[in-house]
Length: 153
Image (cartoon, rainbow, N blue to C red; front, side, top):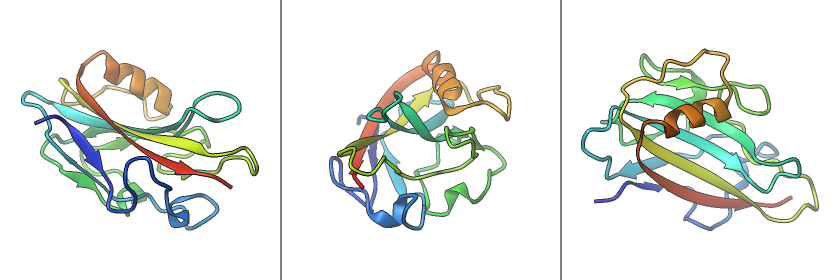
């Protein structure tokens, strides 16, 4: 079975509810996954907006997620667990910051990317940005999946 990422909050290609946006409650949407490949050491999750005016903008980076974990709850960004760590997003925060496209800029597509990697831990500085974490994950990639949500202000 292939790696698959879903959310009970929105379906692939559909609008992300306002409660998960920065102009709403800025909650992290709950996420579920299945099909983690055999031999995965850990998982990495990033949320990116490739439609941002200045280029790809990163909203979340979580790494060292145990491969036996099957999702992240709405409260997952309240703090790191024993294993998983949060990278610094492009707002300068460690944790989730939801969609906040410029008003009138049109529909933005938010890519929730989940990667299964061969390493149990990425040895990355606590001050690392999401782009750095994603680049490190790509060097150990076993499989990747994407869930896309949209948002417009």
